[in-house]
Image (cartoon, rainbow, N blue to C red):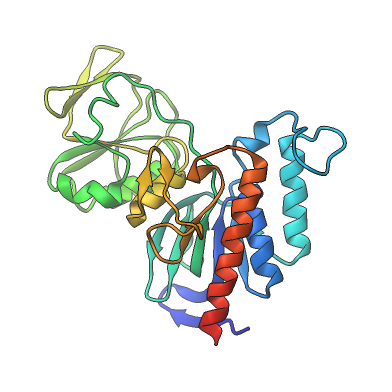
Length: 306
């Protein structure tokens, strides 16, 4: 197995065979298979998800008494580490193309930290925190967007806002600042994350509704004030599987990532498994898809070596 590093302006790049985003059953399983085949694997996980909040699991093979989701995740992480898999706890905020593969970007990333791989597996589960605000759904595609990389060019020299208060929102703001006339962070009553690397307007007022005729035109706040706006980008909480897929241009359908029989998305060398592909949201299904993705990646990497 040949791994390599190379000098670049930002520092030293290490090429992984696979980077897996998500440390649940699907992601850990894919990582275990790829690592046991002799390939270099990195798993990046923030350590939060639906499973960790599950109190009791009693329908998964091998446990004579119920196990909590937190315990199951901890056992999976220990198993991965014992096999020599590198596992880091960071918030992933995006994926982008490079000359040699893909770079996975994380929050608070230093110039020396570069996570680059030949293949990427998206196994983050599903993001169930879509904002429930009056007018939001009505204006989706009419001024409301979920992807700055995709839609920023439509708002050149226009006034836009980003709904969110964390690192994910900061990432979207950074995409918009060179293009839009102005960018406002809308925290909806929450405390904004401290970030001195960007100069952006911040509005902490609670939002009542989004208004407009054929497209979004105005935001009304609970104190009866309002703000004229040309577009709003939704970036609450952390980036999820759909955000990663959309930024890359991968096909999605019904809030799921579309994959083929080999768990590959519409983008070559980008795979998805687990809850983010839809279907039955069960641990056993996630493990199966993680296994399948892992085996497919192994075969592809071996063919490239020969």
